[in-house]
Length: 449
Image (cartoon, rainbow, N blue to C red; front, side, top):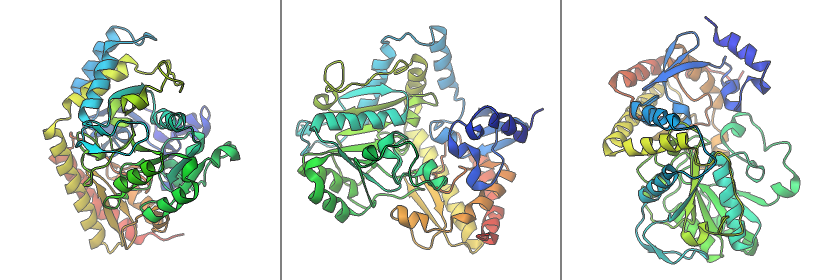
């Protein structure tokens, strides 16, 4: 039997850092990364044969649990007919229709310069791609093509994939590695992204007052989950839409993480203040664990994409039949009962984590956006990237390692959300709850050194 350490040593001889995505290296938690051999329901098993209760969930897609029978069967059935055709399939249309049908809104006026003023749905057309990075990159290109403008406004700490113009002040893996951006991004490209503080509507007004005629779009995580969970202030998304539309710009709502996870229509469906995004991007859940993402919007806007319009986008594996089958099966089984189970398990775990940390005397907050939550080692709830970075992040590594030693796999970064699935039953939740007191004590004993 091989060990995780042996696998990591071998991987480092074949891949940069031994990984294909940086956070997998476990660098910020000072631990040997686990190499998983199998997964089922709420559990993952590493190459040493050790089972863990999983709170990563493939970073979101395993919302029904790993290897859900219906999802596996859908993929097997699709594979039996061919792995891909480089041509259109009926399944692509069915998934696109399913995505559009789930994202509902109240009919309302919108000042969008492209979409018609009154629509019952924010999504009339969908383009399938392979990754969340492709979805946000395409949405930005489409916004620039629609408006004839170049500048994009983003928020510090928001992660929208690793395309060149979006890595400035990004969260997620960039935050974990303490990188200000990325080498290899030309300065003129970086200069076309204006980065401002999150949850600061005055900053939004100021940047539009100064550069509004040049701004193509604002891109925002619907409910940020890449710097830990930092919920939007009440009405923030609606105010963004109003300001952008008043200046002839678009609002791109990034639901790659929250889409179809926090509710049947994503964060858009549960935001307490109605608003009108122009483009919405999806990933993670929508692919059911296989590489698939999407963007959607009004017909008038989306049909600016090739082959109908002048904005080019293409992908050999876009709408791959296996990924489409996995996404359709996942969405088909995400009913009210599934969401109720996820929400209940998330509440129990989040409350237990807060209780354990309080009993250990650890200063902390647990922030939630729907069933997504994270621990931040701060006295007050962070509201933006600066306040997130000010927390006592050094406490997370011993907390993480202690949970791992007790058979609970957490996200290997304090800047990530915890993901609960519909498969987290009472037994799985109990194992997590039982592990928390020892982890809280380890966090309490942590020092900056």
